[in-house]
Length: 372
Image (cartoon, rainbow, N blue to C red; front, side):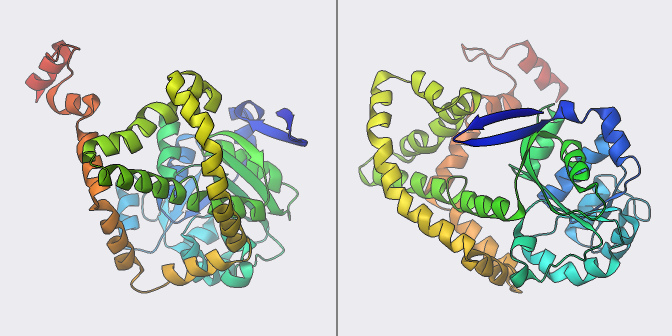
């Protein structure tokens, strides 16, 4: 465990070495983890735990797409795959990983089948923090814990398979057994977290909803779109506008930030780029700050969550979502994006065999062609 102090705040960080395999087995060896839901988080976390030797079963509504996906992933009906009520009854840790709207809908079923001493586990503070809207009020005889990976469940799984890890926050909302914290930490390591930092359900959801709507998804797309449109309206081609807006960011500059930080990325760019970035970042900060203030306020007062629950509970939710995603997918910026991505050398190599700097196929490429 490491402790560091920045900005007057002391934080304790839980590392994998704090929960080695023998200790993990001791904490979770007698647990049965019932994962309710098989979306991106449910799938990624359950497969990682299974690979880490944890006893896992899946709870789903029978016959749907998620049920078929679980079957394809090797979960066995009647052994490791059950309907939701049966899974909850069999589990000692209930990982409640349905969508936020789905958690509200299925809560009566979960509540009815919880047992004394169970751990009710979330990967988002939504249902508990906004219980006045969701109705999710846990009984007093269960632990209520959270492990929230700071990334998509797809990335949680991919990083695990690569021997890496996505960092995660953890929290204890209710400790009935006296083991809630230990359970949360063990489960956080079992799902493949790189390290764990402590939070609360409220802080997790406030920061998460702000981040998703902000720099992680909503704001970054808005900024990209604004720059792309300005470049296109000034006569730049679609490929030039996309490369200068998205491709260079995701393929060159953002990975440098991930490696060593913003200052290191600046130091590894031209002096012209450095000067421009340092001169303009405050303008963008000052322009965006009021939007983030408004966003955080709407998250905290429940405006955003009411909208989420209302929109995602509509019978036409999936059709409405697909229509909106189709508009993004078929916009000029992302049509040229698909073409640009298809031209990356690694994707060309996958189709035609690897090439050398001269553009001629190497031995690996020729061998690949023969095998196909």
